[in-house]
Length: 123
Image (cartoon, rainbow, N blue to C red; front, side, top):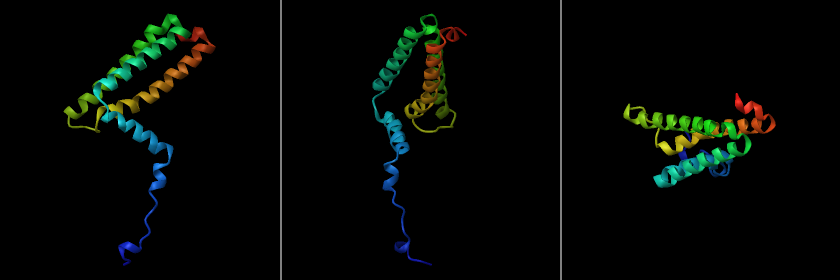
C-alpha cells in the first residue's frame, strides 16, 4: 500500500476560480449579513419589479408584483417551518436567494414578453 504522501492530491485552488464557486460563495454571504440588510434588499427587489412592470404594463403591475411577493413569502414560510419540523437545510437567507433566482428569471421572461406583446401581459 502506498504511503499517503506519495498519492498525488488534486489542485483544489482551480475550483475557487470557477464561476459556480463564486456564485455559491456570494449566495452563502447573505447568511452573514445583518437581517435588516436582507430585508432592505428584498424590499428594493420588490420595488424594482413593480417599477419595471409599471413602465411596461401598468395595468398588471400591482397584480404581478403581488404574485411575486406572495411566492417569496410562501418560500420564506416553508424555509422557516423546516427547522421546526426537524428537516433543516441550513440558514434561510442563502436558500431564499437560491429560490429567488428562478423566479427572477421567469419574471424577466414575462417582462420581455410584455414588451413585445403588451396584450399578453393581461392573460
